[in-house]
Length: 181
Image (cartoon, rainbow, N blue to C red):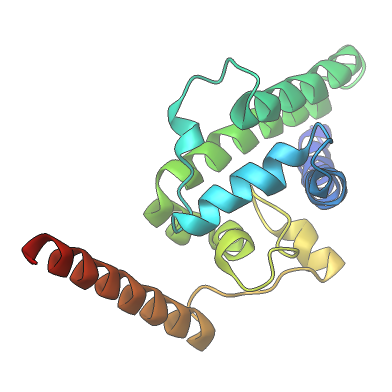
């Protein structure tokens, strides 16, 4: 049974590594398979206060959500041969892949839920440094690697939200003037 907690730690470490080096490192290059993460997902999440409309579509397709699911399915398949020898470890890895997809998708469909349940992931997308807070499911490895940077609930976040609200109000006022004139 020690395999289960080891799998959870192992999976969290890989979540950090893949996010930092594949999704952000390789993903910065437009021609990369991983570019959907930086060029699409981050752009949408940043513009829409954490929401990403791409999670409203079917997972089956050659788009960001489909590529994310494909990567997770591949990681699961790679570990399945270990099941005979290390069943609890394999079960933990499979659970971790499923849980990653589940919480990541929900965090971008329901930003209020993300703020409450995954503040470290909210910080990753909405904070000033999108190259920190690499973990999605839980921030253990970010703490180990020193990459956890809190943003939610800080003075900086309050100031940023006030500025965004003021910009939105100005946009509504300009739109109303255009309609009335």
